[in-house]
Length: 383
Length: 224
Image 1 (tube, chains in turn cyan, yellow):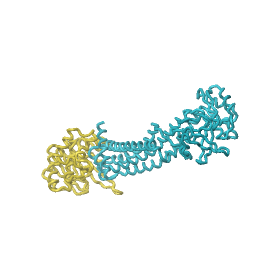
Image 2 (cartoon, rainbow over the protein chains, first blue to last red; image 1 turned 90 degrees about the horizontal axis):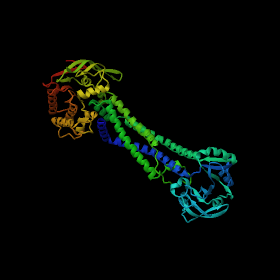
Image 3 (cartoon, each protein chain N blue to C red; image 1 turned 30 degrees about the vertical axis):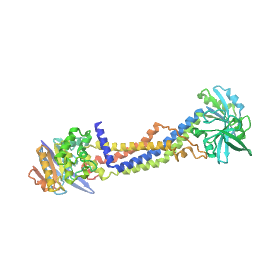
Image 4 (cartoon, helix red, strand yellow; image 1 turned 180 degrees about the vertical axis):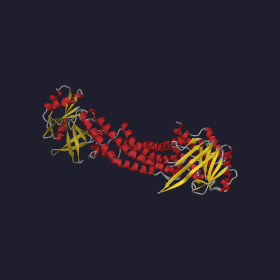
């Protein structure tokens, strides 16, 4: 322990003596860690955000396909399905896409009778009332109490805005217009007694597989979506995007490691001589290596910590400008989001392993090569 | 027992396509508590032979014993141990680390042992005072004059209290006064029981009457 403390003290002195190089390496490492850390933190935050949002997702969603395309479903089917064992509740849902010319984008019109986890404001209680997503409100300058005109079959139907969704649920609500089911049907041009799909809650999720088969037999052309599979799909989407992003950042990591390799393997005559001096005054090869490893570990620790702080600040304080688009996509109505800090320790360890460990390793190699030769040779600058 | 014993020691270097024999079959014994000088022209092999004596240069063949301990077949860390306990070495180019203070430089050998104890620091400061560097302890090594660097390097070699002190050209580039001070210091160390061997081509050192023996080297061999 005493020996290690003395070597750490020596290593700190070495970093001071080579301040320029030490700073350059620390900042370089911080930059690379910040890039990777931002991608990881953002992926984790979005996954966590989605996980929070899917808390109220129905266990099963039943759609009807005609000629391979989604078609309307008769609400009477809901009663048949409600009679099945393990089904707790069936809710016919009304929703659809509407191309909003003013926005040059599709919005999602939803008929909802209760909040589930969607709303942050008041949901519409009567026909002619709507609640809108944060992006729509922002782009059209809407506030509660305003009117929104939506052209339907050649006629503009006006609705009162009674609620605006909060940004905390933006990933799910940014492009929504929520109305009562009858009003939503009118906005979407759907006939009475029809629904877009049926949301089913089960007494136990374990029955999902069996019920999927029974519903398939009861409802011709039914497509049953399992919430667990949807969650997994979203997870994979974010994993894939996060992974692609990390892949895109690999050249930055490779470039830094190459630069560090070049800087570190090119032991200058001064450093080589220093190693020769150390060996000549009684230091063993292991002592030289330990000192060099401490130097690198100190640089790596400071660099990685600085990088992690920068990544955190970039993602959670600045809302990841630029990078968020890469993970959320480029839809016309991008959800404005307040990212809630979330961090996966396993990924943190992976980051450390991917950046810090190679950094320490490559710094030790040249010192090892120099320390292995006779001190006399090292002092003469020999190889 | 002899402090240093060499038996038919050879050291060959490869210089491009040609082989250079820097030490060509040297056999000698330096008694304990002696002050010896290896003299000879540049390139005669003095420095290499000194390195072999100190365990810093591995001989191509032959046997090297320091205070009875055979160095030749020791593994690196054992050789380091012997060097650490028994040999102090002062280099021709002094080899102080410029970015460190005089104190840090002279305590450098003690770092792998867990750092200097209070007693060792006191001993280092006393030695520095003895060689006239008492007021330069906290100065950077780069700020020292040639003579001061030489004396600081000798103190660094002496801090671990080695029984054998090896010096390569200890009076090179020094004026007469500084050179005399160095010779005085070496003679007094010898008088205190330290075995001192210096490689030099400086007559101020090898012709000094206090030298016990001056050995002449030429082309890697002992001539007299």
